Length: 636
Image 1 (cartoon, one colour):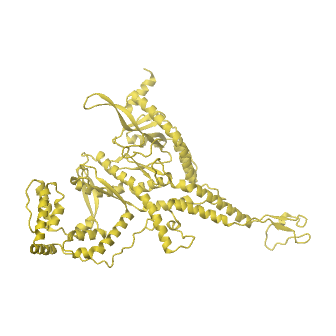
Image 2 (cartoon, helix red, strand yellow):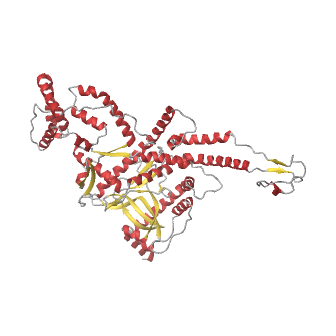
Image 3 (tube, rainbow, N blue to C red):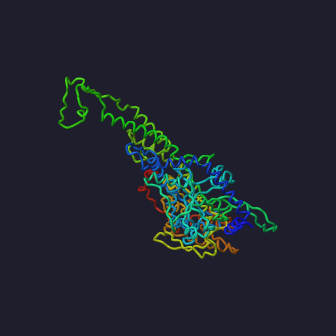
């Protein structure tokens, strides 16, 4: 056996592979990297140039830069980042109701531990600049007991040329087969992660894409790119690669070996595999993508620099040409008669300076006339500005600047409403990725929050302060995955205010109707006024009928017979009994009792009098309710 064969066997063994598998995987990953590099190189070059367009500290000091890209970018970024998306978990099965209610405070608690606010900012920034942002959801924090999301540097991401998104559509069509990025770490960092091997063979070679991207960023920031240091802090670059790889495994039913394609994460440097991990999730990639202006046929869609780059460059050229003309007119060239003015230095300006003239002053000096700045300069610059504002929706009003043209209040309101609609569309599109993030957050709890973990204690905001709620796996993982609902904060607020106004208009009629469910009327009034579930529990005392009905549910769940009472509030009992599957016949009995009460006016009056005593009608003062529209995305 040759020395090379022995080395290959040892390398393969170190990462948990057979020699044949090691060689096949190395060749596959090298082929995929080469394929992706050839495909992405033009896009990387464009993106690196745009970094300087966004912010260039090494700009020409004799010229004026135009911040059009930065202005529009920050306006849209501020609007979308300010509108925090509200995520709510709802049960798909009745038995999972309590578990879904536990997920909501848990997700809110993890928001801080995951640095979700920073992740959101970076992912929105990436999507605005590159068209699509990627957030890796593959690490689990074993101390904080929550996922550790990481936003990808899109300047160096290698993607599958045939992919239109990370996980494709609902059937997986258009999902990526492979993808990855270059990363660098010190030897100590590699060892601490405990998933890397063959580290003694790592070389000091640098990744060209990573090096060029960093050089462009350094140049834009006004610093000089330098090489790495020596010693323990020296970094080593590897390619972190997600791919699918066929492996043989034993069929549990037949006992025979068969090939199955696995989703794996590979670390490699120049053909040397230093990491091989079979991913826990074999159904989809643990990467969340976020797009700003997606289309149905491509990965990147459209981004802000696509729209603004040419207009900023044209605007800068016109601006600098106009500036040159102004400066030229301030420092004029001229023609002088050398027979009348003997020395050219006599033409230099000086206070109280007298110039000798040989002969008549007439014709001694004649300035060269240059054309003044024409209206076409203002027209071109205004047109470019208008095109950019129409494309992004970031009008002067949204940018916080006073419009050059005087506009009426109606015109300003119309423009703001149109911009809000544009930004609301982007917020809804971001809702797709937010829903995917929350769904995968729950999935990671299913994969990593095992029974071996005792519990996680969550801080919950109560009405009069904090309280602590211990949660185990059985408290959050249900029979079916919960439904994830995501909505814009401002859209939700607008819907609430609209509902409140309609409800208040109808309230006098509803409250005076003796057949109205007064308990629901009161709770709906509180909900539309912004009271949360905790506040409503403290505000409204539960009626005796609801408490009795809940106890009856427990009895019926155990198979016990429960009789109805003629004094029962049938509507309350029906509402509560609908939560118990074994209460079908009991609910029918309450409906029959409702009919009986309706046919006996004397008993009906007595029952209504008792209901008024148990559930007094609230008095609603609508004079001080503010029905003004909520703050817009820009003025929030």
